[in-house]
Length: 399
Image (cartoon, rainbow, N blue to C red; front, side, top):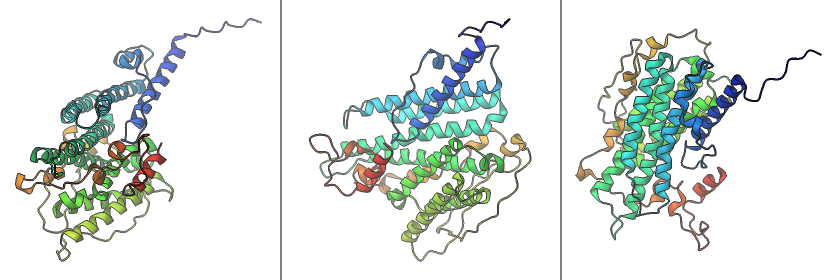
């Protein structure tokens, strides 16, 4: 039979497909393994293909999705480099760290902003993806900055367990940065078209869930009660409410991913209510609106001062029909619009005489980290400490 001979193993298109798959797996590996402090180390090695992803798109076989894939790999490499440096420094143990995590965050912030700007310049349709990805990367590094600031405060406290003013302020700054980033992620979620949010894959919701989970830790560990005033609580309550209502409106079935996220946000609203009532039970409640983008892309940045917190009742909204094709430029405006989020976290940076001075141990705030949990001589977590038993069980369930 006159059959054509099979093409070689290194046929350009087949080779290109294998390279594409490898980069997809690399980006996914870095995304999922670096999303939280309880995640396992990454499994995918960084090879020559990953390091040359910018040149990879110069091939004549390049497809349009290849450009976005290569850009994602670039951001994942930047994020991975900072996280690996921080994790390696953490291995030195308390009191022996040499890395300034604040500087690592500032570098990541600059790199992420430059990356997002370059994405929008090349392809304006990637605006939302660029903003979310850069915000997510910054929040991940800021989260580790929060962890380090508490470790440093604990390991360098004086004999009475009190932390210095500079250390106290760094904790506030780290928390402010991470809170602002998380709030920015949720604010960005509110600007998505209905279809983009309702039918998005779960990996996209990971951005929003990570931000919500960090804010949950702020409320659940008592930081909010100690550091947030009524104005901040009111702002965040209304943000949680708007996000929850939007997700509930777009939910298709009760088991929809966004339905679970909406219920999680309702829990955060309940925590806001509990904390605000503890601040001043007799306060008269007044609302603070969450800023939103107008059709022209303008952002309302002013947060009016208030002495109380508004906790209105919520209503379930019906599902809407899928929207028609959206003009993204009209909805989102420019990249700078996403940087105009009111600095809620800056309210944490009070004067020196208003020092936080909580004098709590690391595990009182971030019990997810087992670095300071009591252990027996074999290195096993001691069972006598019941304060963090629930947290430890939750951590071990992820392993």
